[in-house]
Length: 106
Image 1 (cartoon, helix red, strand yellow):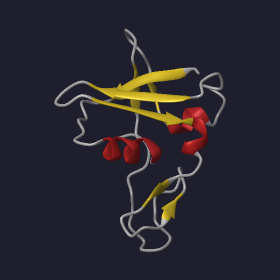
Image 2 (cartoon, rainbow, N blue to C red):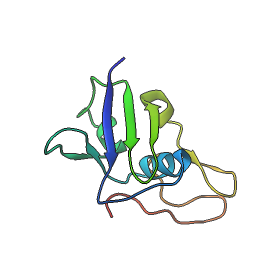
Image 3 (cartoon, rainbow, N blue to C red):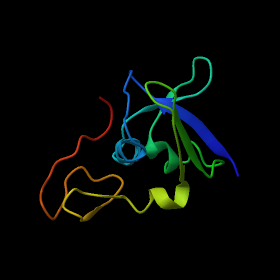
C-alpha cells in the first residue's frame, strides 16, 4: 500500500485526529514530508496528480504526536457536520443546517 506522508501546513497544530481529518476533507493544505516538499490537499487525490497513492498519512509531531491514515476510498465519502448531516469532500456548506466551512487554502 502506497501512502503519501504529509504534515499540517502553515504552522497549524491540532489537538485530535478528528480535527485533522475534518480539515483535510474540507480541502485545507498539507505539506509533503520531504525537504522542500510541496503543498497538497484532498483535491490532488482526485485530479490525477497522486494517482499512484492509496491514501495519505498525516503526521503531527508537536504539540502532541498524532498519526492518521486516510485511504482514497474513504475520502470520497465526505465528513459529518456538527448537526450530523453528511457533507461531500468538496462542499463548504452543510445543506441541512447551512453551517459554512472554510474551503481551500488559508
